[in-house]
Length: 504
Image (spheres, rainbow, N blue to C red):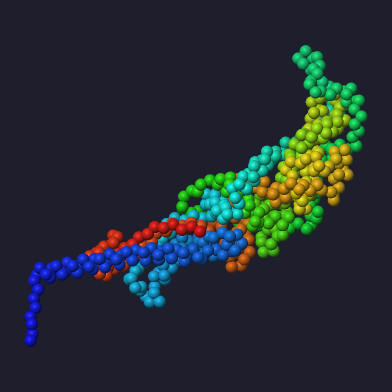
């Protein structure tokens, strides 16, 4: 028997409202899932792009960066955008089908801001190095190094000592040429004035100190020769490698990022950078790599010359200056050596009877003695020994009364158990460099070494992206409720926007 049913209008409206409410709840749940899904795919897409980091930079120097030129010659942020969009699109697909189960579509993938290693005159690079090294050097150890570096800064004034040697010798020669100018000073009335500490002619003539050699003449003659040949055992065995001057970062227009300025590098970060140099860069006393562009990498960073030999020669000159200043301090603080220098000055210039000339000669003798000792010091450093920053009596090597014999080609300074190695002295000198030069030259070495690998011959450090801010947009159609709107789209359209940052 057939039965007829009916429903009231009120009941129909009630059921429709209930259904609409249930479908709205379902759509709200779906939107929540879509938001999480889009957020995950945004991160996954950027991770996929970042995974294509420059391998040579990571393998040799443990730095992770994305090559903005993808191995080519031209930096292109548009290409990165295309790769990012493609990676997200691929990650949205399921089992190779043309759409995904959520109906999600990528509508925008764009790198808005990015930072390159070379930005802010190398500050970005130094921060990256310091971040990597912080786990390898505690702050307490860095404090000790900091005090040592600050002490070395006070010794970087050797040029004043260099001038005093020539001034002393000129004073003696002028006194011999114009003997009428010798004698004590006079006051306004023309009467002689006896200066405090002055040495009279009679005192000088009574001096029984016999001078076999004039230290001033010996040192000035040495300075006319090639210093490098006096400290290196075999000049012919030096590396002949060189860098292309025109390709260095300091001499070309670099690509620039748009992510803003970085904080200035602090002293702790600079010390960490020097320790990084010690780990990953070679120097004269280390074993050079056959695959690298130059052999003396730390010397290049310090001096910036195009050839290994020129860089080593410049380093030797700097070491001589800093060692001479340290040796002069030792002589001045040692009463016996100071009196010995004074006796030689009296013997050389006592005939003038002029205390000013004698004191000037004494200063020159001290500087000459310090220079000869510094030659021996650098010889020892280049042969792998250690030299104390400030020596004691037992660590002193040369004899001022017999400089020629103490300066034989095979001689060198005594090894100091509490001393610093050649590499340590390089780090002292590198500490005093401007951050821009330090960073750019470090990157020069990295760039040229990576270019030695055929697959990366177009590598440029100003193409290396280390941080990025990017924007993504995803779109999906409403499924349970066409009235749903997310974002600025039309009814039934769900639009999800994200702005994220990424850094290695």
